[in-house]
Length: 337
Image 1 (cartoon, one colour):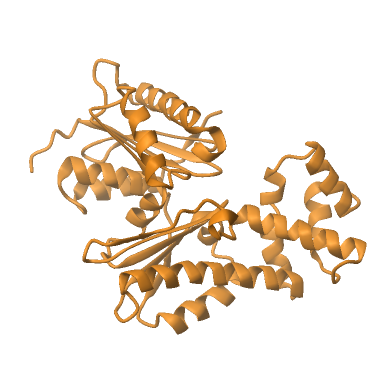
Image 2: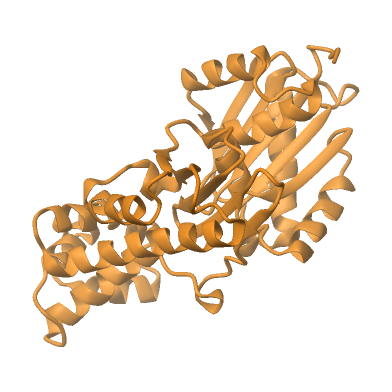
């Protein structure tokens, strides 16, 4: 199909810990690329999340040199926290009322991971970042999704849960309720305190920010690599939770008996920690011997951008898609408050 290569679009990948926004043209040229904190409506509020996306749209439009007289053709915002159909409908209604572009689409960030990770029509993507979520599809056009509302919908895992478990076991080890573990030293090191109790009290009183908890995750994996039994048990549980999401989606979609692709993304899986894959890889190989696992090694915002390009160009792997991927691979986002 013919396409105006100068037509602009904006793509948003909004996570629980960071939000990436790209402004580009239909020929795949990146005009702006920025990063800020969370845009999750569960963390900010629904209207506040859309307010933030609106400010980011203005920022990248200005960076791209697009005036208000020439709005982009599309804004595709794929956000953590856009989980339930009623939430997606509410977010879209608000976003589309803002007049950002000719077409505006808001949906869940798992779509960005899946689109960036594979072109396979039979695939399951798992995000293990600050939290956990998963999406799957098959060649018949069927989908598998989870509510992903946290413990109330049976979710466990991700950086925040892992960090909280480090604190839990370290506190119990320090006061004698639990077995000794190297995680005590991990907490003291991360928080710069003499005791785990001081770290916990500081969190409770607001002296320390929650970002310190997420920063315990690399120390957890290091402790597991060093042979700490408590750390190893936490990591093993995380591996089983990832495998469980794949297992359920594969069953729902009828994928178990044929080749399919498993995509891992989010900060935890993207880092590919050996301690985690010692447990995850054998599980996936035993249950799904025909599946191929791949960890996303490019920014998930590429998936949101490709989603926009798919609509603008009528292609799913054209020259514009390849150019956009190449430009994002060598470009660092501008960090903004």
